[in-house]
Image 1 (cartoon, helix red, strand yellow):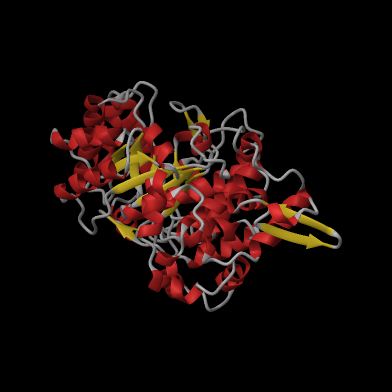
Image 2 (cartoon, one colour):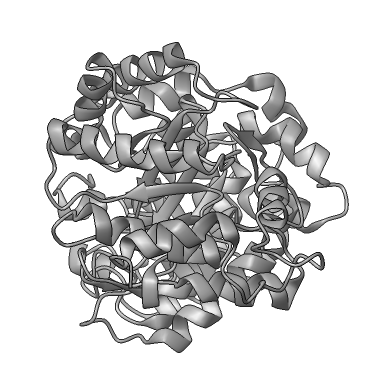
Length: 471
């Protein structure tokens, strides 16, 4: 609060008091709902009053300003250059006259149909999406997210309205193939795995990645499963795997919202372009050619000391510009994985998950969520149940499926195979259509599509006996 109006770009007066903010970045940070990462970075609002004033001030900012005042210098950051250089002015035209507050009202109105949202998405920058999310309630984020339809495809079709997919995550602390195979079988029996069967390797190198890729490919081909596999290794490892003839379906990479973040991860935009071209050359998709899989998460830029004094949610939204460039099959935010230093408790994790889903869907991404928390966070499985349900209502593309919801390799808590069954049954959601048909054909699903056949399908009996050693 100050009476010196000359030093502030943005001001808001309440009675005789004037609140000021020196830059758009500061205004965005102060307007962000409270979270521990922004407090750690020293950019959070000091009081709830200051946050409310910042949100009111932000609501009056014209959307056009985000094209004129970049938060990370254009000359220093290839993501800023990507955002500005590829901005679609024609798509922006229907909303170009709006302020951030007017944009919120427009998004919630009947004018913003799924077709209209698709029409304007290339004109929305990540910073615009982040800004409007900061002045929206949770229900606003859910309602608009549900109107954003994003369809992708590889061996099945992901993201159709009325559907919820899952990543089957059969991680193992020693990459034991028998243990991984048992988890895959378990997940398939719970109708998990239509988004991807994706392994985080315990030993991350090219040889191990190729070994895991071949095993998953054999399972998919043997049972004729309409899904795709992915080993979540570094993008440069996947390029080497392709060069060695490995059966690569999807290329994975964790991404951040600043060039410095991605430099710390060991890649740039050119690396991703090379990897995508290599994967496309294999022509392994049957119904589509979306070959990339990206993971994000609030706090990654701060943890790399690459946040440029920008709040963590805005940095996160900027990562979606990277993802959008490469037309991925899947993107997900690993929302509570970094820990309570960035998202302290269940309330902060829930808010972040809804923000990430909303911003990514608004920008045209097939967004899912790893609904998760670390054991030292102030959160529990009930918090995850709440967030999972809210995201499913909002049209989330996919969630994780892990045995018992406990990842014994990465040591964090997430959603289980039966959690996906719960939310599908509760909300009447189906797996990807091709996978849904396979589940029925394999006698995993009953004809009503929402209940499981409680007998072991004949196709799996021999495999199960082999895993159990014939007992």
